[in-house]
Amino acid sequence: MSTLSYVVGIIFILVCLALVVLVLAQEGKNQGLGAIQGTVENTYWGKNRGRSREGILKTITVVLSVLFIVLSILLNMKLF
Image 1: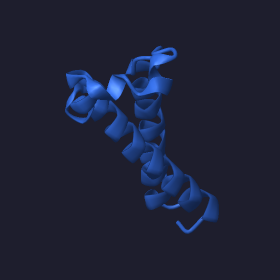
Image 2 (image 1 turned 180 degrees about the horizontal axis):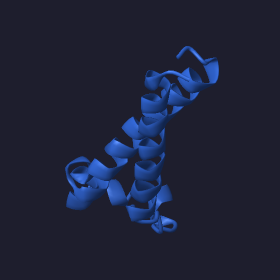
Image 3 (image 1 turned 60 degrees about the horizontal axis):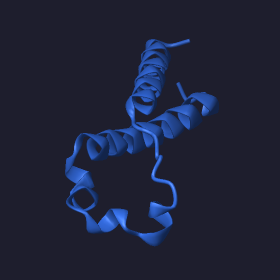
């Protein structure tokens, strides 16, 4: 195995660990039936959710998930 393969493997492990920590750090979606009616979106908190801590965590989780999938495919293809 080449050095690049080890580096990509270590990056993959770090992304996996960061993804687990971020998912565990996020709050649950315990909105009940209020989410069906759409009443949550009319509040100040619902409109500014993207700029809050949960919005940032969600964005980082999506980016790390995409990176996880790409690295998984690259490591499986054995290009290195």
